[in-house]
Length: 483
Image (cartoon, rainbow, N blue to C red):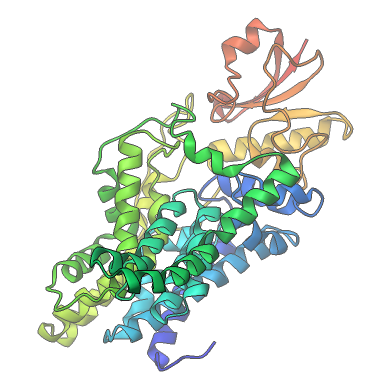
């Protein structure tokens, strides 16, 4: 990795940011999102069932980037993902240098100490893969390496479905460029438009290539066509909808208040000129608006989760650096030190993580008071998470290894030697309490078993002849057997 003039202080900041995330990776006993474990198990299963590489829920683009390290375990997969996050910070620094931004030494801190970064940079989730592919696409596009940029922007839709919108925006950016096909058309320059058309087709072909390959591979191996999901805007009502401004709140509590202030200063500072090349960065605010509208309208099972916009971290860091540069001449040295302390310290506190991660939202779990620590402690198992772990241990101790059992929570499968017993993850999805045979063992949980996709409510279990054998975590995790 060449420094390309970023300077030793950039690398000091880069090291500090990565070490903080690495510390979280190595000391956290729990995980920030349950989805990580399901993604990991599917990735690890690719080696036994290659068709899982194209699993639509697990996102083929993410699987392709993480299935090799997943073969060696959760921690290696996380370390690899963190390495991708480190690469994303470096690419952000290269872009900052190209843009002529000063004080690049603080840029790694403005990215790596965003409040959501330490807990979302390393998990086996879609956030870091989306982030690195996006900033890589920007990096190549700004250097006129359009085929590589096209592949990156085309790949985004394989990592997260909303990436398809960014793919389309990239296509518009290409054809409306100064010498682009569409730009000539709008000016009535038909000869020039005809001359530019082959180039537009060529770049367009590279842009759609990842999506075409994914659909063909998925069709051949799974009999599924992922492109069809874009025609089903409301696959379920369970995720609901919310206010249009919700992601403004998520941006504040995700990036963190100090960085948000610098971001606003940088965004509002007068822009002397905005070149067409620079307009490709508009994909970042467009992505923010897209998520705001999707959740507001209750589309595509959004759920309005804050972590969806974490891949914007490089852009947030760059604009925040612009804000820092605008106030830097007016600040004494102690003022600069205060800004630095505010960014780093609040990034160490991570108040959104300390206050929002827990199990009090689970039906049946009594509330638990929380207090803000001066530095965010490592994640420990919640009462619910410990209940799942205890249930997995009970299965291992008391249940015959050859007996099939059912669970709707991936953590149970993970704690049982990182695999499911008897059935692959998701193999039970289409069964109902009434359809399962007598003697079936179920580890029921109050988070997933009752969801719309499973509908294993306690009332229905009682009506269809299930008998409780054991319970954990205030009854939010239970063992049932069908009579």
